[in-house]
Length: 214
Image 1 (cartoon, rainbow, N blue to C red):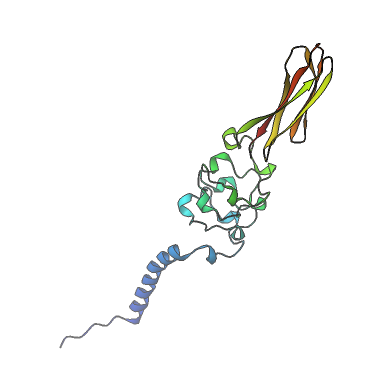
Image 2 (image 1 turned 90 degrees about the vertical axis):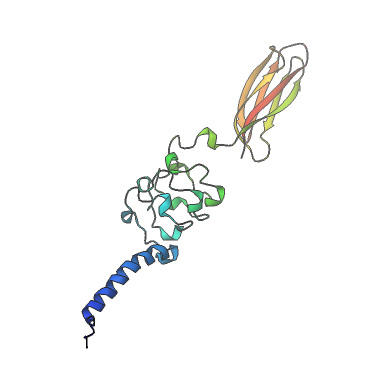
């Protein structure tokens, strides 16, 4: 009668360890999410340069409480890695960004929406020179006010930008070359001009301001 071969205990343990090692990597890769990371656990020295790219981040996986302050700097982010679906609402606050960390090339088009920013999170020191371009700003519109100036008289016209728009420049004009500007300046969210009419007839002056849309 043939003798049945039995694996030794050592072989059984070795095979079991191999299966755990092979299966464990796949398990970890699919199961580790934001809830498995302790708050403040991700520090700057734990991230290689260019390590953070779009395909490495699960949607909404990186939340503000998981990052130590000043962790994510420019050299840690691959170009266009940060898209809007990768950022939890209000996750990016001022204290999470190193000065000049967010440059134009690091942000995908339309990635940063209003709902992704905490109030007052983007301050002057966080914006690199020339990072905000004209196409990233709202449109402009003109607002005007006309005032009649009596013959040989003086007149003042004032105009205010409407609604939530913001004044960015201004000036004025007159209906005759005989009407001379005396002063022109910004006043609050608008513009004021003053003119002297040197003609023998009433003339019209116009205050003009250019307003940036919100």
